[in-house]
Image (cartoon, rainbow, N blue to C red):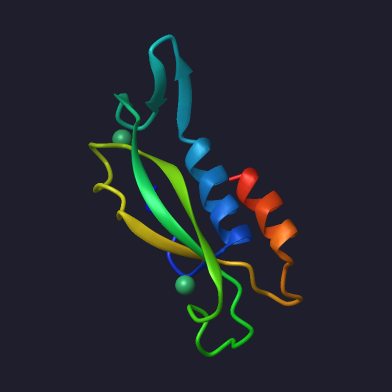
Length: 105
Ligand SMILES: [Zn+2]
Ligand SMILES: [Zn+2]
């Protein structure tokens, strides 16, 4: 899967779940079922925005988190090094809530 960009946490979780459904646990790690290749991960830096302006969702204060993005080196290209997640829709999350969400990524 690719690094989330301009996605909400919900969308990212859904993308992650969909990707997880194509994986199979193996003694050596995770395998991508469609092609039988072992999954790799790439470290990505993801900004978490909580912009109050729907037209410019990348504005607003945010925190940068380091996420390991799993991907298949055969079926997919390498995930982007940077991306962003949005805690929209409203209401805005408090810093505490953001931390809790980030801890679950
Ligand atoms: Zn953004
Ligand atoms: Zn694959």
